[in-house]
Length: 286
Image 1 (tube, rainbow, N blue to C red):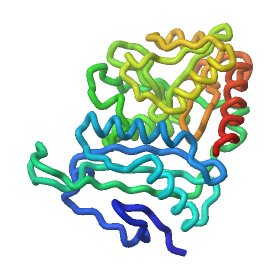
Image 2 (tube, rainbow, N blue to C red):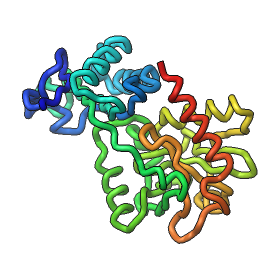
Image 3 (cartoon, rainbow, N blue to C red):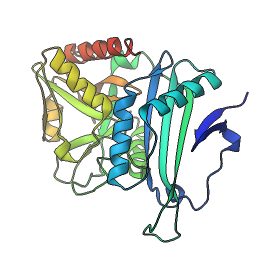
């Protein structure tokens, strides 16, 4: 059965998709991406994701001309053509082909692709037992201009995650060069202290996750005090609850960091409440 993708201006079979070997995404990782999922064939919080992609493209001076409605229609068509229900979606934007110079001069022809694949969900048992994290030895620079953008330069995240998995952990907690807690390789992190939710401030030079944003909204809607702060690993280890978020795992409790167990109950009350509220929100997706 053929598998269909969107590439630049049309839907084609994946085997027919062709990229130039001079595409700057291939040569330099000069581009951006977004990954998310659908619920009953509908992309969740698509507007937020396209806004983030569009804002990053504008900052990095990469042309991006697609509207939210256009992308929604493309995803709808791909889900039908690929016979999908719950789907993993990836949008990839590169600067594409332009001049052969390292510093781009003149116009470029950006490459934009959308892939939809069957969604592989996390085992339900993990939401009851939690996942372990290890503290990474790799630090996130507080001056790196790319940290707040989801760029194709993703090798550092790959190495951090690979090392964590090799050592038997789900993901790794990353500190920045000021020794503040930043994020995990592929997720944002939250701690709970006496029914208050705290997550690293954007000043820690982190990716402004969409699920992170939704959790802060849910806290406000449910009268849970929430704040964005700069804090050290010691505060995480003392927390009553810790959980991590991204658009594929949603809200995942953390059971252990390095060798230290977290909290007395997995999932904790606040983590479970926010997990349930998030699930209820996705069920309302239009």
